[in-house]
Image (tube, rainbow, N blue to C red; front, side, top):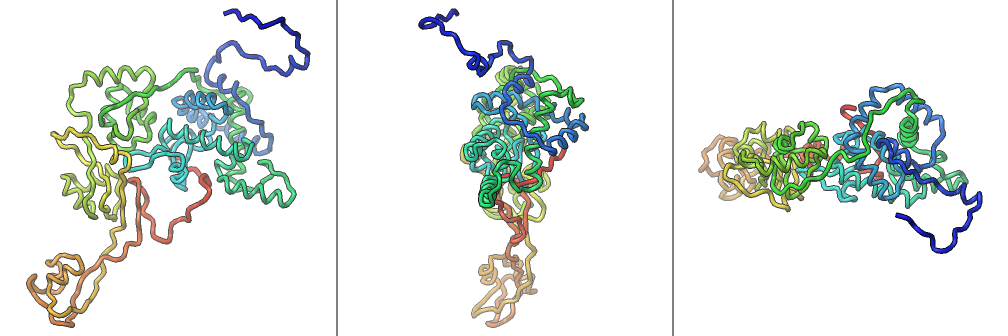
Length: 462
């Protein structure tokens, strides 16, 4: 279309010409080129950057594994950054955080590709319950991470400080800046006194950025990643087993889980997770196979709410499962008791048609308390005391009271008579929340950190 100027054209000065950016007409050849065009953060030039350049470039296999893993997610992240007008080198941050492993968990319990701590995840509306953990979700965690980074940049007005705060916590960075101001020192990233992990944090990102910008300079090579979407979202309207969903999409199970890492259970509950991600070309395949599926029910699991506090063996008996299977599917550790109100996955009856409700799918939690060994206690019988009344008072079985005291279940005790009862010790350990939560001794757990990202990442496999 021909555009006609409103009025006569005016010449521009040499200074004006030099200050104007030249728009690139050719589309980027691949995603790496597109990303490089959006690099906008000031470069950091320090000895630590050169140290990390050497470290990464001397490990080509590690670089290759990370970049291969990233191909599923990078296009989406770059698109989101461009929409927000944020520097595109931030798309490389998951290399530093998790090596692009959405299942990575740090020693401080930060999880996912962007390594959100539980409390920070909740603050940025990342749901964490018995059936999913949105800190691992590709779309939700990326949205939350970019929200957080934008917030931090707004607070500090500097991307290096924003990144330091993402790792160390905004409170820690703010206090370090205030301290330097009191001492008359500089307040840039390189001026602050900070933990070694944070000191290396931005240099790591800068080193990866430099390698991506010029891989040949470092003797590295990057796998080709096309400048097009890798996945698309697909709506699901019924609960569906993970294995079946992957089969209908004709996608290897590991690839399905890599795109849907928040689904850590064998079933996806549609009320809580109404969308799944599938490789671009497999979305239509999934829908077609789903529409013509005649293999019976889509989900072989449902949710049972524990009516009372009980051991896993009793819960398994009530729902018709082996204790080993119940503990395995719900990730229940040994020597714990399931508290009343806990949500447990159990086999779905053949005639059960109703899917799990929105309330349960969104709010279901597994709450566990340590199964402490009962202690032998001697009490004095009151007036007109019997086996039955003692059992009722201490909430134990009358048959147990009779056995402990070598009497019949209908026996009575004299006033003041010593009676033996075995009572549970006061619980020393408690775990609430997602299945798999470690049960920590009361008073021994780590003090909750005010710094949301003060952590050391441990990736199971990079």
